[in-house]
Image (cartoon, rainbow, N blue to C red; front, top):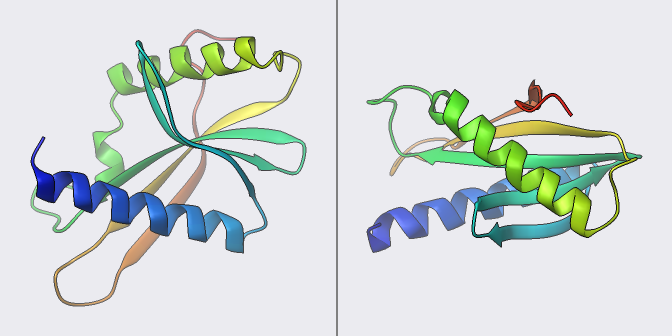
Length: 125
């Protein structure tokens, strides 16, 4: 991945974390990595654990950022979230998957779209 894409992704994740904090979420982890994949942000919204995928783009040339959260990506996020829940003995906690879609153009206004409960666990936990 190019340095520019890494920087863009980091900017998007920083904006997303700030957005969640403004909404009253508590950030528990960022860039939770395991061999099977990564979750950008893990947060708590009241009593609910929230696994957040952040997608950031500079243009709409390839569609909305959230459109990149494919079924394959959802399955990967589900596996990593289940790993987190198991490791932290949190399987009894309510949990959901949110997507934060960020359009970060070189010029113009930043657009942040937060889609709560964007998809169900692919494994059906």
